[in-house]
Length: 170
Image (cartoon, rainbow, N blue to C red):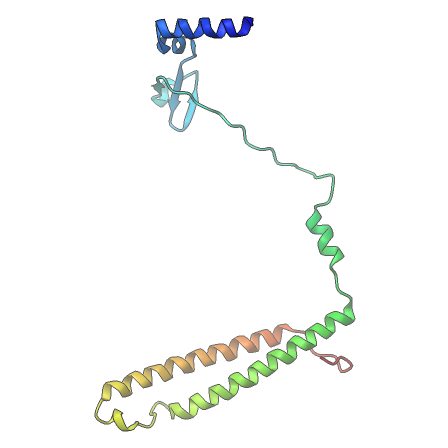
């Protein structure tokens, strides 16, 4: 009851005197660059902030030495695979990559035949329209470059895998 009467009395007083009287009781706040302070530095050309509230939020503190191991580390150690299964997975990966490399090699050979050392055979409509021939040559050139990049990438992936052990079947 007393609290509600005090709130009503404060509201009536603010209504009569206005908010500027309440704000006059608040400490003066200065902005010095990106810093807000109650004690301005005359060397920094601080400006006074009027009728504005500044909220300061404290940052989080970093834990220096965590007492408990993180759940990600314990999950990673629990998901380890035994050596035999890992060798089998590596052998399967090598088999898949080798099959893909052979398909890419066959596509590359087909493109090389169509490329004909930079002089692809002209098609019937390309004799009358040389622009079509130039476009096809440019497309073949870019397809060959992509094919060579694919082969190089597959070769890199194959070199990263360990050699297949004789006793492991994919």
